[in-house]
Length: 379
Image: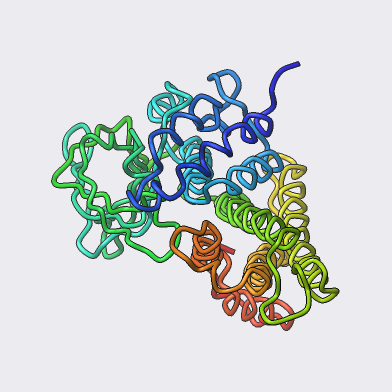
């Protein structure tokens, strides 16, 4: 029987967990973790089968990333965004650029839409020359290719040219020093008058690939960032379950272990319930999108419902984590305890802009009372 991507992911978890501290310390996935993921074929999750990949649907993507997140959320984050970026490349970039992305199914592709003021693309014979800085390019130090958009002067309104650039033509500034997900290599790409040939550029005024990402495809990025956070919560739950069932006793009580306390057991099952609910919500969104016929868009109200589901799942991960920390106690915050790393990763990752709860709540109200348009540009 052929091994499924989920089976392969499960086998990598011990390696990812063993190297998670190094990944965080070195601000990029550890070499052994990268080798394990590559050997499992998980950098090729979204690559078509004809090009040597898994052609995984969103349901599979969620399951695989959640499993990887049990070991190392940072590494799972990079795997997920690599899958999403390869999907974007197939939609937005010219055929030659797509062929380059698919030439090595196990390659890592990073991307960034966070450009500094002054970033630009200038048309020249045969292509464009780009200069600028693009922050938060997750996987930047593992990637061989980068997708970046640079403003192209077009009358009074600069329009972006989407480009595929070899990372070897760029420099990477190590600017991502964060409380959580520190190992995602989400650093800044820097281009200094880099030439990009026409065949690797999608111009805003050209026929061919779409100029905007369909709302449904944007959910891929949301799922790719949320699933590792669910996995991180499950990883924390595994650690706390061992402590609760073991010899750890609530301080200054008559109990010999936390599991002897009825409310201790309840606290744990509440954390479990929230984690399982987050996974169910996320898988439900993935299944709805997987079943959507090609070319069909969901009405904006239905897209809003799915965004709310994912934002709620993100909140449930944070709630579960707080309950688990209560059960484990202050020793869970020791530097050598993996629990504190899971906690910090979840705190950061579930606050990705895709899940911003107050903006989603505002737009939810706008749609309910037809106070349009919505303020979310990606909705």
